[in-house]
Length: 244
Ligand code: FES
Image (cartoon, rainbow, N blue to C red):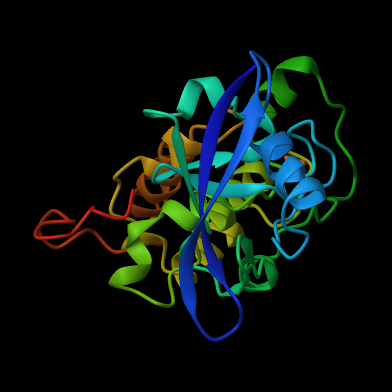
């Protein structure tokens, strides 16, 4: 076993500070297991969120050395730098305590884009090739990593967030969804054109969903159909991408 220092950004509702905790780790110890070790053996007041410990529930998203990852899917040995791992809460969400952020904001936003299946009548037969069109998007676990890393919120607070467009894509590609192109209208109203196409959402997605590609496809289709206006002159110039 080796030792690692977890440098955790803490927040008690009023003030922020960094606190170091030294714990032991082995070949397969995850960041989440190290946090649990801290909480159970050193400091029970340390707060973080986790449930499944298996990259399924999507609750343990944090910033690890500045990168957005699931704590339960990240091994200490892969992220420690000179014996230290920096842990901070995700951005673009209100911090409740320490590493716990409020997921309510992006979950509420999903309602704006009707992020649920609306069945068509009559229902068409579904074949494996139909499911392949949105197979990866179905894997979204609503972890919020893409939402946290997204720099588009800095210039547009009304931007829906990458999760919304993954959900729109998933149902738009489903031939048994009754909304069809109304989903593209919803994407436009949800400010999809404020996406700066940095691809950070794609890089951080723990399920390998091509989030930015989905956004580009929705925008391209929307422009072809005249639902979304043509762009002015490029996008993203002069933008600060330092939030990744
Ligand atoms: S604890 Fe469920 S995704 Fe990490």
